[in-house]
Image (cartoon, rainbow, N blue to C red; front, side):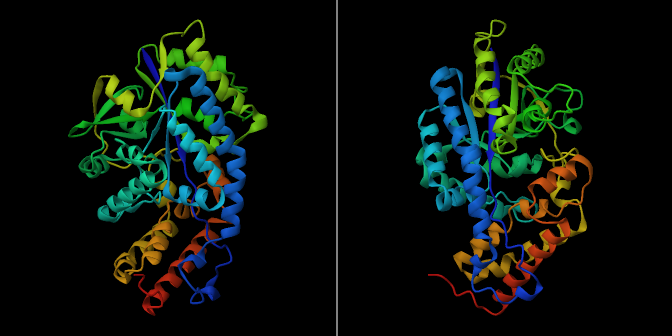
Amino acid sequence: MKAICFYFQVHQPFRLKKDFDFFAIGSCKGPDGYEDSKTNRDIIVKVANKCYLPANRLILKLIKRHKERFKVSYSISGTALEQFSLYAPEVIDSFRELIASGNVELIHESYYHSLAFLKSPEEFIEQINLHNKLLENVFGPAAARGTTFRNTELIYSNKIAQIVKHLGYKTILTEGSDSVLGLRSPNFVYNAKGNKNIRLLLKNYKLSDDIAFRFSDRKWKDYPLAPEKYARWIRQVATHDDVINLFMDYETFGEHQWEDSGIFKFLEEFPQEILEGHLSRGKYLFMTPSEVASTFPVKGELDVENYISWADKERDLSAWMGNSMQNCAFDFAFSLESMVKASGNLDVIHTWRKLQSSDHFYYASIKNSSDGDIHNYFSPYASPHDAFITYTNVLNDLKLQLDRNLFAKRR
């Protein structure tokens, strides 16, 4: 039996007011004054209607059709869940319905989709625990007992495994980076270095990105991508391998790839082709990550000394830490850690943590070519420089308010 593992990332940051300029520093009346509520609401409502709601309906339809043969997994960041609660609570209801089917695994991560692990392992662990508590509050106790972890944007190294092994996780999702694999295949289960109890599942980036990035590209040599063609590729790759890990943004469906591209039709028909097609019937199952990790043998150990991720061609940290603006902003944010926590003000701490979302640093990337195009697509700013200026203005205001002790301790 071969497996296909669908993992979908669901994340939305709290976007900042783009007009928070130098002259706004010192004028903020409270920690919530940095966010562009209208833009955040508009984006959440738009993506809910274009992606989350129709995609969830389709996934539920597929679960009912294929029953135990079709399972999927999601990670939903804390900042996304907060905004669903504020602006589109029906999205949470639709995820609850999916989870109630028993065919969905919720993956754990850091609440704020942050890069805290680079500066403060203690803060990183606290954010993971906060995410667990949120999952329990929103989806019930079973959601908090998950054993699969994925770090922000699939960022991973041996250090990440060392940290999360103490939290009880048994499986970690990450990128199938060529720099780590060499000639080995991503389509097997691996062990983390020095941690025989932690399994690693690796994204097959070619097959994943065929859906996530190339599906509607008319210049792509394989356009249009039909379910039959994609199923054939899966069968070819899986001939001697165990599992094909298809990891991608959930917003691929309906938002990044619009409905008129045929993406929903593809998502509906591809599982049918794999599960019922005469060449593969009875040979494949769609499994959750924890099922894959417990079903297939370990192929070997992966030594990941340097950080890898699923972002950009480099598949490292350069999407967020690739230039001086990004590093300066990140260092500034964490220079406030002791001051923020000493305030004891839960609202201030929450605001500071929302400012850690990796998106704020991603927007300040100055990469060119196709990677630069993707950064620009996601950014609400006119330029990386504008993103950096707005972000540091907000941090300067936060620091000033803390210096003035204007944020009273909430009891």
